[in-house]
Length: 218
Image (cartoon, rainbow, N blue to C red):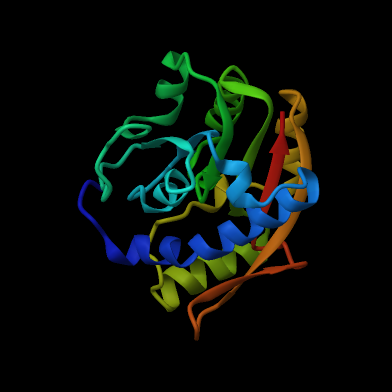
């Protein structure tokens, strides 16, 4: 892309609050820590970081942040403990000597071929500290998710540019479970995401047949 497309990034920007809400809930329930306390001094890697604006929120909490994206549409400048790199994710991970406490994979996995998903998780496990968290949001793989994410969101309502998604790359929770087990990652949680196109807002839901969050722990 390498040119900023507001139609592509607008829905991602709308998801920032629900991502934060979901992580806050998981960390409170599983670590007993407030999200602001948890992220202080943590090393975060955001794969598919987009503009870098979401990651910058956690830099503000005292985290050391690295963001990776194949497109150079960064809006935040690099600074001490905050670095955005224009590179393909697996290429970065293969050469990375650093280990991380938290990985963000938000709206990322549904853009990877299956073999690249496996390669990604194999590479990730070499770059994780003990008890690291991987937070994920992606699209389930079924006829309903295809209908809503592609036929409706892209083709009818034009909420996203056409061909943003390829149904063949969508990832079901059961497939995520298989991949995570292969690389000794514990799938701790799956929770649905519900979108309101009128208010352009998201909320957590028990309905996970379309968009969903997941949490893995190493």
